[in-house]
Image 1 (cartoon, rainbow, N blue to C red):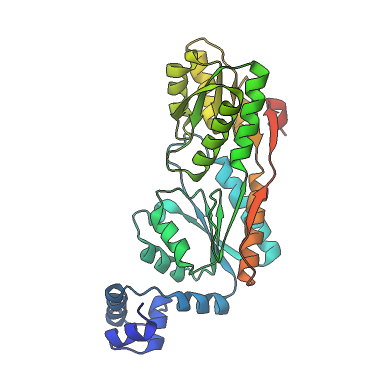
Image 2: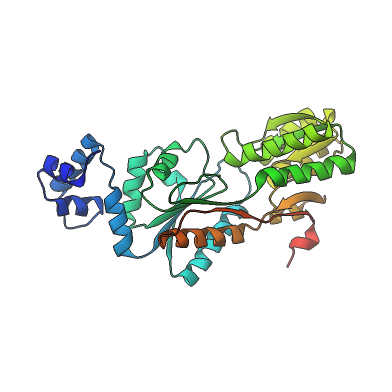
Length: 329
């Protein structure tokens, strides 16, 4: 693996100049910057030592990487709760946070994302909504350049922690509750995105429930989309006794699809978002405290920045029913 000395020699500059370029100092000429970056590219240099040194001397600045789901039609309440939790708790921890939305770095490779983070002078990263298709970010996590915390993906490493509810158990619990209550023999399961970490976990939970109770399942991927769920419910719900949804937004779409075909089937969701209370139908769901999830993620990244070992943090959830009276102030 190439060292910073190799880059300096290749570019014909001093090591301090390479460090300044990688850390985006302003007092470097464009020509020198271009030579250094060309050497970095040719030698495939990953500046782990630079990032570590940067973290120690620049204080605590954490990038909050929010992955945007373009399939959602509603305002993303979950991401807002994540941001509120992190920003409010960061003041108590005396940590500076910088929101980074995934679409700004779309198409970038791991090295380019790393260079962007270095330009922001970040010391650590929290990832919200990381999917399997975000391979560049996963590569960056595996590089172990920064302490990282991943929300809703079971990724663990020497300096990588994760925070989430037990999605598999939570989906199992609500599926068993609904199947037993409605004596269902056939269910329609509207899953999330095919590339989602939580999709796999929740899918396994409902499969376990169906296997245990002798229930047949028709699983369809709704991509956490209200519109897609509405169409799938219209196509498949008549052949099922119960509709189990991997998100509340999906459940709302399923309810509207059933209304359009003038049929009733029990529907349950997952998440516990406020929007669920604004439809004329009480829906059972798994309530997560997204604000507290983000608070715990900030605590986890603070522990990592202090040199503590990585953690696997599982949070509580609640099986509940949300109605309009529950969400009005």
